[in-house]
Image 1 (cartoon, rainbow, N blue to C red):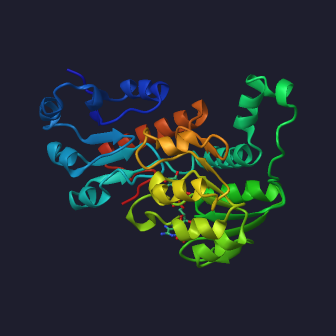
Image 2 (cartoon, rainbow, N blue to C red; image 1 turned 180 degrees about the horizontal axis):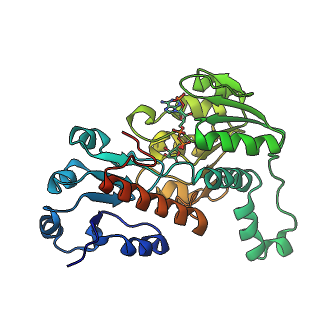
Length: 313
Ligand code: A2R
């Protein structure tokens, strides 16, 4: 019989990182099981660790009463019922820091792509329009503009540093001011009114749901650009679609959506002022490997009764 501890994996992540789990655990893949209840029942008497990249509710915790740790893959853990875990004495971890630079790189890339219309220009060349129609219409300058960052945590600060390199005037909105050389706004609408670009990088969940609403989008205005690398839930998607359609908002670069991987057709139809990405801000080989290893280390620590490396509860 194997001496390796059991690990229930609820939902998968980067395959190369997951392959490393086998050296340390007997891995049970819930998302592949036809009989999920049967799988849970078969390991209920011994499985002490749960891991996953999307949701983990009280039902799974109750099915594994010996669980000591839920090692979540991702910095945002809004899919994990942390309250239920805490009530059951289960420690929860996430994967912060190792992805901050990656997400910040991507945020700037998405801002550039949206303002300079890089995907649209690629399509323009491929369609032969450079030859038939001549030069493309001019685009919007990025450097030197005013940017407002919604959320100035581990990732937000890296976005701000990159914006400094682009000689931008930097503002931010959080619940409280930070010790940083950027302009603090206690009111999101006021910040949106004063900036050219709004980059959202707050956590998801009830506290930030629809923070970027019609009022904020209207304050950003017809020349304004929204970049969302946070969570789909942070933006009122219906209000965003209306604002873009009616020209009350200039453009949007979106990596996250309300009902991923489903993206509203209205957003897909707006090919000129919207850049869409499949939630890939942290998705490089290097970063996803680092995130996967952090999941593994947290799960091992949890089973051993040691402090988790990146505990959230
Ligand atoms: O509000 P503060 O001072 O705690 O600042 C945090 C801010 N934040 C909020 N700002 C305004 N209204 C809120 N209701 C609110 N809740 C949180 O978001 C802080 O500056 C920032 C979060 O920073 P960290 O916890 O360090 O998160 P990290 O690693 O930057 O990741 C942010 C999110 C993830 O949760 C994923 O959903 C997404 O980025 O990829």
